[in-house]
Image 1 (cartoon, helix red, strand yellow):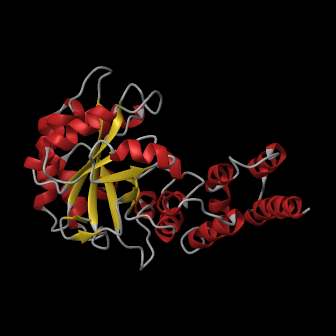
Image 2 (image 1 turned 135 degrees about the horizontal axis):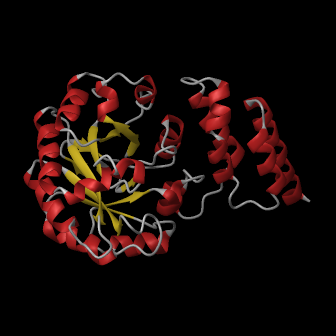
Length: 316
């Protein structure tokens, strides 16, 4: 399938996740068959004011294709700068975050707060479309309000403003990540526009994938279902996948070493290590040790010992 002139490998894409979809994780997902990957959300304002930490989120590998960058903010001027400064030229798609429910984002009028100000949301889309020749896409929720459904009106405005595709997470902002995804709301968005629509929320296996596809969406965006499991894309397309988890997490770390210090990686990867262990047995002690490991080498040795022990158990 295509988003404007960008060819996707398939209709299963990795949705952006703060603190998760780093350069290593994205490339693992691509290797396991994701049709498209997206960076963590990047502040357009922080780019405008030269934040070093923000620009570090833009690190990519040369063959990381197709890859979108997700921007968030509330001032069209910030988005214009971000698109004109040249730092985003390597990306294939510009994605806009109108869905983040985090209080620290919402209080600034960003993320899902833009669903309360549809004229401003439309202006931001228009600004981005005017300042890039790349496809501009938008990710949002069902509603900012508990019982709202402004996603349909927002989807129409995005299309009218020049967006090439939209992704809808079928939850409201008050729900955060709890409760059930509203598949009817996703279907309503699909029926309301002519651009590609991606459905997002609670896709973790073939059964939930089939339910999401039943809404008629053009593609499916997978987020938390991929945490600690970047091979989910291959699993959903090919059935059961036999992976060496330790090898996968080693590859994850090795990619990060191209861009970050080992001290940083040791701390940053702790949550990823726990996700890689989430379906494993008897890991309580390993989790405690990983949280206090003083070096990356120490953390990797803990993981190596655990997984080698698991192999020995299976061979007995």
